[in-house]
Image 1 (cartoon, rainbow over the protein chains, first blue to last red):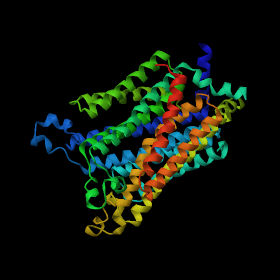
Image 2: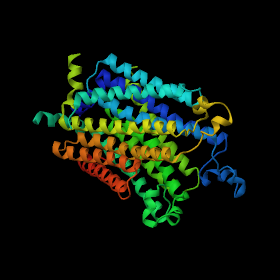
Image 3: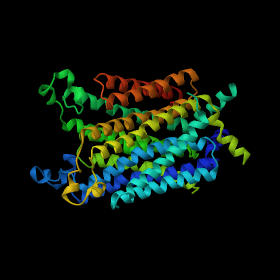
Image 4: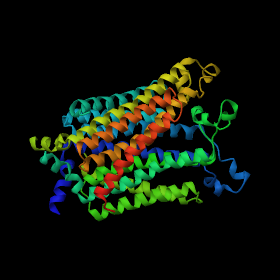
Amino acid sequence: KRGKMAKSTQLIDNEVFRAYATYTGIVLLKMMLMSLITAYFRITKKAFVNPEDTASFGKGESAKKYLRTDPDVERVRRGHLNDLENIVPFVGIGLLYALSGPELSTALLHFRIFVGARILHTFAYLIPLPQPGRGLSWAVGYSVTFSMAYRVLKTVWLL
Amino acid sequence: KRGKMAKSTQLIDNEVFRAYATYTGIVLLKMMLMSLITAYFRITKKAFVNPEDTASFGKGESAKKYLRTDPDVERVRRGHLNDLENIVPFVGIGLLYALSGPELSTALLHFRIFVGARILHTFAYLIPLPQPGRGLSWAVGYSVTFSMAYRVLKTVWLL
Amino acid sequence: KRGKMAKSTQLIDNEVFRAYATYTGIVLLKMMLMSLITAYFRITKKAFVNPEDTASFGKGESAKKYLRTDPDVERVRRGHLNDLENIVPFVGIGLLYALSGPELSTALLHFRIFVGARILHTFAYLIPLPQPGRGLSWAVGYSVTFSMAYRVLKTVWLL
């Protein structure tokens, strides 16, 4: 039993892996927050997509009018999808990067910039900030993931 | 060669990791099933989105009428997207959680409740069940992922 | 310090894991490419979804006409979403599969076919190729992931 515990904590004892776990945890929680913001806008704007979600507003036509799209709800949903498109590659490539043995300082630089850029991206999308605010924050996160992928492929290449 | 094999099986010998792998495999297969259900409804309801998908129904106007949205197809697609939004954080945070050395019984509790909640969520979405059935099953899965993230961040925190 | 480095490079020294990392890196970069293709079509087709993205085209009505959907943009976006739906399970199940100790040749076969199929799928979607080109390439990738999931569950099963 003890032996198994020791094995299981090896990775988690590695500082780069701990940094990866911290930033991945934070950025996935940030992505999960988008669900709550969507729910908040659906309820306050009374804009739903499933008929069963409007049943508490009454039956028939009186409830049907709440089955509609709302610009604010759609905006949050686009931000959420953009998170999926960008955070999924970060989580996957970041794990391989953390296991490829980079310097802790270099790894921290990558993780911090990525997570900072994605938090900025969310603010830029939801406020919304004028362009190129959102575009730049997207590009910064994208570039960080690309940089990690380059290091991973250079280190592990086995086709 | 032997040494490498031994190394590669270390993680997989850990019971918490095996539990994680089992439940992650099941819930990702469940998510993949949504693609088949979407295809099934697209074909039985004759509701397609790409012109090339309707070519077998004839040319021109006779095929064009099958380029349409269908409520049942859209419902499955929403369930699929909701899976992506919730199962991606579970897979990422769950991996870090499994590596953070939790008790097997606690880990199993988390994994079982999450996968059970997501299976219920799919039934609640597709039947559909009256609310708050879908909402509650969503919230249970969300809370489990949040609980795992809390444990991960408490254990690994390195900013 | 030296000890930590040695630990962190264990997994990355495993050949199956290196193959997994290589193919996962490639297929995630391919998925990230979809963002650039979407941006390219949005700009060349002048078809945007956020009002702040059209501000450089002028104010009011003159910019509003660029807030529209374009068939080519929507096609790339569908390809991107299909990537998310299929590459996320590959990355998650593939990691567990790589850790389950398969033969290198078997693992390479799985990874190569999956990544080849997803690259074909993208071409089939964007050109577009007549069906069943896209359908078959989708099914091949799906089957590979299913085959890996079967091996994972058979190896680790702990419910």
